[in-house]
Amino acid sequence: MNSELRTQNSELSLRQSSCKIRNLEIIIKSMGRSKRRLLFYFFCVLCSVFCALSPALAKIYIDITSPAIRQLPISIRTSGTPTSKQLESIVKNDLGFTGLFSFVDPDVPGAEIIADIKVEITDGLKVILSINDLIEGKEVLKKRYDASKIIIRPMAHTISNDIYKVVTGKKGIFRTKLSYLVNTAAGRKELRLMDWDGFRSMKVVSKGLTSSHSWSQDGSFLIYSAERSRKWKIYLLNLKRYREMVLFSSRGLNLVGGTSPDGLISLSSSKDGSPEIYVINIYGKGFKKLTRSFGIDVSPVFSPDGSKIAFVSDRGGSPQIYTMNLNGKGLKRLTFEGSYNTSPSWSPDDKWIAYTGRKNGKNQIFMLKSDGTDLRQLTFIGNNESPSFSPDGLFLAFDSDREVRRGIYIMRIHGEEQKRITPKNINAMSPKWSPYLK
Amino acid sequence: MKKLLIFLLLIFAVSCAKPFTKPPEESVKPEETVKEEAIKPEEMESEVVEEVVIPAEEEITESAISAEEKAKSIFRDVMFDYDKYDIRPDARPVLDSVAAFLNENNEINIVIEGHCDARGTNEYNLALGEKRAKAAKNYLVSRGVSPTRIIVITYGEEKQLCNEQNELCWQKNRRAHFVVVKSRFY
Image 1 (cartoon, rainbow over the protein chains, first blue to last red):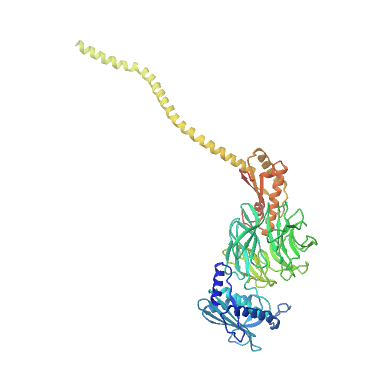
Image 2: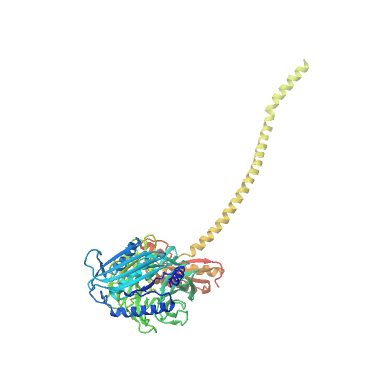
């Protein structure tokens, strides 16, 4: 069974996609391992049953849906090889950014829960995580992680996800990624991927001038627009095979907007002269035109259920955010403050639309409810553009020139903890947060 | 004695003859000067040959430059107002001469690039840049240029001419830019 896992892992690492870590849940009784395949599958089924049941049974330490969120005092104790300290700092950075935790020295009382992380490096990386409720005096999770390679960062993020899940009952975003653009030369931009904390950056598309881009909802495809040889086409990249194909091509400008849970892709195309909003499916078929106006219609993004589209139009004389139904009807103007409101992003919980608005000659990130009420300004320094929600809707990625060169920043959705995650020697912009990745 | 006398006489005669031969000497001088002149033209000729070569080269380069300059003076950038894509009155003479040039030179095709200043957001600026390039194209078509001779491409704010944060630089970047191509597009 071990060798099988190892071959799977090496295959995955060859593909350069994020290395998977096999989780084996050890229920406190500690089941004996068997080499027989049948028993392995039985074990998997048992695990998933426990995983499905545990959120319903488990106590939730922090209710992130409540208006007054408290910080949970937590101790993180690592032991084993020196790399355990590196792993600990990554876990603390992950959990700390949420604002939901306060870290307590493990040797000092005061923590409500403690996470023990034992790290072992043999031919790969082995970690045992044990989370204990110090108030009730019981173990709430015990888990073993095996990786055939020493992949500290993904391992740390996986552990963060599990601690976060125990505490909040929700899925963590610590294994998600961001796609973004880097300006490599005048008129050239390449598409890259990185972890949510800015590490493990990877070049994905370097040909031509890549512009708007979007993740498929399962996280296995990137859809992007690029100018190559004076043609703007929409491309589709399979992230497992790294195979690129043309999804949509026509005369004029073709810019991808977003994707829907039904596998639809929204885009803006000027194939008939003026840029209008269209939807197509992931096979490049089912072409449907949604707007008909003389002016500019651009940047269409789906609501989380895929029933509506938010987009930018200058039909009212200046670029503003509008919403409409998927049949092109029910048009509603959302933004009225200012004369330049663009690049909408719809929050995964359907509540908010974040966008870039021009105020006092500078671009800033704003957010309003998807019914157009409760307008909030989230950034104040420099020019800030291109907001993108994390899949749990608790964070926003955006780009900013506040530290001279444009870079990618992340923050919590009400504007706290604004933090640069790309290095200062590159021009990085237009982040798009991935969905949850496996 | 007689022989000596004759010899003296002869010497006298010769010495006296010198003043008489002076005029012919003078007439020789013009000959010499003529000779000199005759040489000079030879030298001059070789110089002239060189000079002929040089001016000929200069003439060729001059004519090439002037043609380029002529094209440059015709294919000037068309400027736009902030967040606008309608053709300004000051852009019409530029577009009129572009149209006239294209109507005279049917072998030439053009690419019109649409550009924006960096203040807007990237995606919207791509759409805006295309609108600008298309506005310029439509104007040329209205002046009799075949639309098949014009390709339109937008670069939004991706190819800036300058990066200063002032109106002078922003205006420089808000442009439709012409690129002349000799081959046919399709």
